[in-house]
Amino acid sequence: MKGDSKKSEWIAETYDLFHLDVYRFLMSFTGSKSDAEDLTQETFMQLLKSSESIMNKKNPKTWILKVAKYKAIDHHRKRKFTVFSKEKFIKEVPAEGLNLDDNIIENEALKELMDCISSLKPTFKLVVILRGINELSTAETAAVLQCSESKVKTTYHRALKQLKSKLTNHSKGGNFLENVR
Image (cartoon, rainbow, N blue to C red; front, side):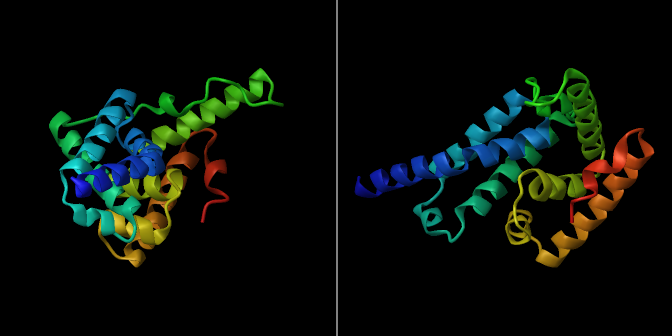
């Protein structure tokens, strides 16, 4: 009983700390709010089912994102093809100091960026989502993807290069990636 209470407490704390990261990752991957919510719930349900050894993990965030990655891949396989919904990332309320025309231009550029990200091959898309959108470090991304840090760096570089090329081929492109390294 004592172990169950400790585990439940740990899961509640872990959920509070990481549920938004998991949700953002899954939202970026699936493009669907309802799918992301369901998969986030499934990810944390997996924690309940797992052994207590996960409580001793050095970095639980990477382990949880790894579980989320597998949940997303399984979901993708089941649905065969998921349309990436770029509108989910657009803020509906204009930022202060921007007039309506600036906000429309900003939304169009963001739609274009998300459209280009969704067209990347899956490995590139995963790295861009984890590094660029979720802002994970190279080491955290490597742990989630179960590969070396140098592979993450190389893949991220190639993905950004391809993304920049896709954006340049579109009308308003390249501005997003000028400051990304």
